[in-house]
Length: 294
Image 1 (cartoon, rainbow, N blue to C red):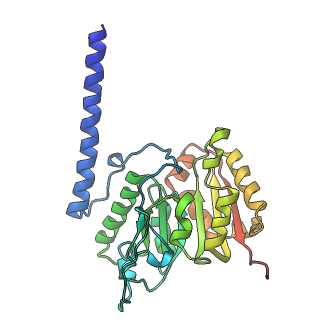
Image 2 (tube, helix red, strand yellow; image 1 turned 30 degrees about the horizontal axis):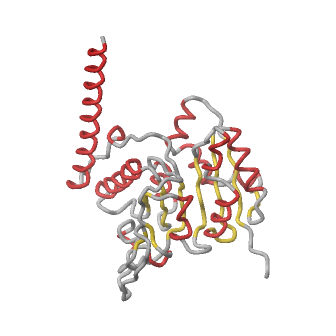
Image 3 (cartoon, rainbow, N blue to C red; image 1 turned 90 degrees about the horizontal axis):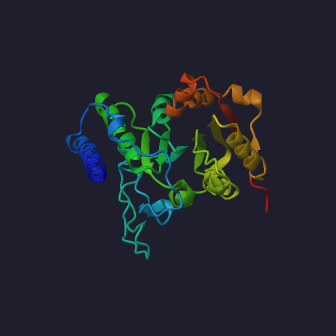
């Protein structure tokens, strides 16, 4: 009996290893062949939870001016390239060399925890002249969105979807490294991980500290859009934004007339799942206030 269980375990492990290798081979082929076919989610699946406090070995710039966005938005690269000089840093995770290519405009809209990129793709046509960036901590999910954008661009003869990109990033650690003060006009936080256990609440994407970072990168009048199907999390987000001196809640009438709310409610993969299950959706918008005079 014990020998049979051991054999079964070995076979199961072998099967899992084969599937994992198959997923890796598929993703590598997508990258090398520049496939026009849309990537398949089953080859990019990853557990829903990622520890934001772990060292994910992410590369990040020392300051926003050092970030090279040209590979994310190649259609928006400026014709004239500034001179660049090598910069040294003691951090092995920091990008040490300033970019050689600048964009004609800055990233202005963030989808934090963008998942499989449904909202990015939908908003690409709504604001075609605005650069939108999805930020996703899970490596394989971020890779899916990047491959999805590449396929969409190829299938449109490079005429569409040039204004969206996806960066694997940990928002809880490196947001000020990527964006200047007052650079962003909209931040979407759609169906974030609720982290139900109280000891896990520190990992929620809305907190006193993180709200200060959102306030830093948002321009006055900028909006944070939040949506969840978990009422407790909704109340948590409302409580923390209401308590922050840099934010005020957007009135319900203005919220109802905001075109982006409809897209946020229906275009994310999680939103579609909630819709199919006829679940609730709790929405709240918060406006960045002007800084008080010194």
